[in-house]
Image (cartoon, rainbow, N blue to C red; front, side, top):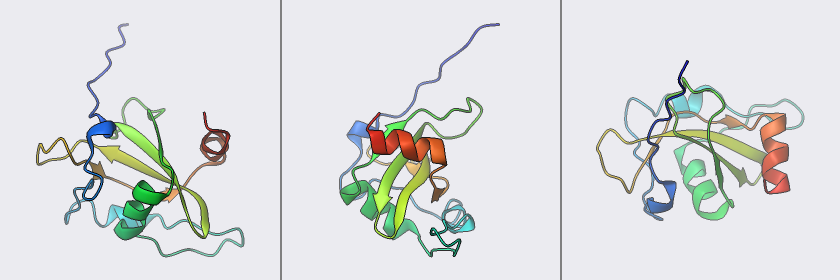
Length: 120
């Protein structure tokens, strides 16, 4: 069996002010899995929070564990009120290499959160 790696978009080239391609297809997925706080209450977050996390949340980018995922990268970042969010990022439909498509939003899983906080 051969492992074929795919070409992933370069997150270093993203536009600092308009890095995300948000449209009617991915917008519902950015609200589907709302993160919860330590008490288990759902926290309302959306595309604007992803942008804040990208700009000010000290984001880190990791390859997704699942090779079948549509995501090229998993962005982990801090958002005030939520310890760490996890945002799978895919290449844009538009072909604009300065943008990417966030295709989900959730609180980071325990292992991912620990890796992010340790700076790995």
